[in-house]
Length: 155
Image (spheres, rainbow, N blue to C red):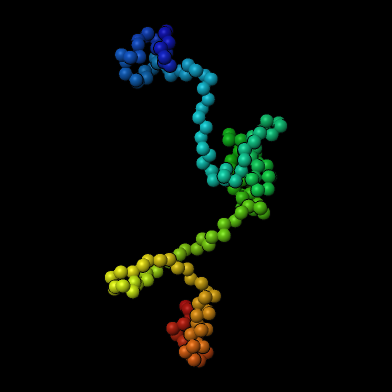
C-alpha cells in the first residue's frame, strides 16, 4: 500500500493516470489533520440578538444582547426555540415600530395627460376617515342622518 497525495491506493497506481473516481479499494484520507473545518454562518435569525460564550464549566451558552440572560446553546443538544421565545418576551428587546399591515396600491392620475399617472401606496386610517366625514357634513351642511343611509352602512 502506498500513499499518494491525499489518497491511499492498494494497487500502487499513480493519481495522475487514473480518473478522480473512488473505487472500493481507495479511501479518501486527510493528510493534514490540523486543518479545522470552516465555520458556517448561523442560519437562525435569533443569533443576531444573542452572543455565544463558554461558561466556566465548559458548556456552550448564548446570552441576550439586551438583557444578558443566558441560554444553553450547544449545537448538538440544544435548539434555538428557547431563544426565539425569549425574543418575544424580552422587556428590553427593540420592537419594530413599523406597521406590518397590508398596504394598498393607489393610482393617481397625472395632470399632464390622461394616459400618464403615478402609482403609490396608501393605508386606511379610521380616524382620518372620521374627520373627513365630519368635515363633509359640516361644509356641505348635511343632516346628521346622512350617515345612516344605505351607502355608508357596512355589512
